[in-house]
Length: 265
Image 1 (spheres, rainbow, N blue to C red):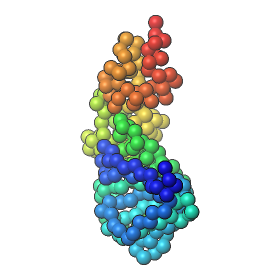
Image 2: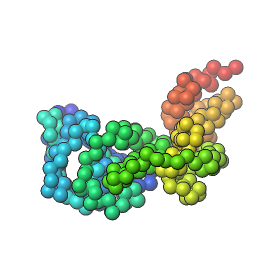
Image 3: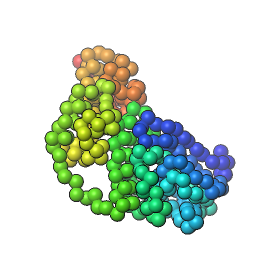
Image 4: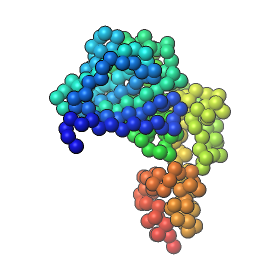
């Protein structure tokens, strides 16, 4: 591929609030002034971007998270000779409200290592079919931290809620195979999604999506020992496909489902 040819990848995951995910590597292309009807959450992995937002010049070094509000014109061009590599997730108004647009215009570039790491983890989850609960959980915490930045609030004081954590665990236990979207769990348990994730993680030392995958892998182990093939076990235990089962099984057990099944006596 020629050096000046862009590399792009775009998709719409099954995660509420996410309009589009867009990964790109541009060396020479410059965006003209334009607007989006969604929030643009951007991280740059290589190089840098210079852009104008509301007639003020900004830049995106790799240690920042950039949040561009909807309906506000902006452009973008490479700020380094080798261009830039970026990852973008576009969010609808259910994640960030219009009341935050003015704050985002004032401070679009956020220097926050925790937020930067969480956005990277979010992109990793969004790229894996079957890990929607993880992506939704990570997006909920990202959205919470963005709102804290824009409103100038301190979210460090989060109270434990063991009763809520236990209720979520019981809900996950009842729906190991089918799973439960985070927003649905929040409605059923009458709690904010971010508080739900924090309460569970604080009580059990593991995130809800990690707990659910652990339960699914446990069921998969039993079915494999019963003689079922990995291709049969994957849908029977709630995994998206055999590759999804293999990735989580190997992470938790240390071997692939096929080797685990072949080792049984």
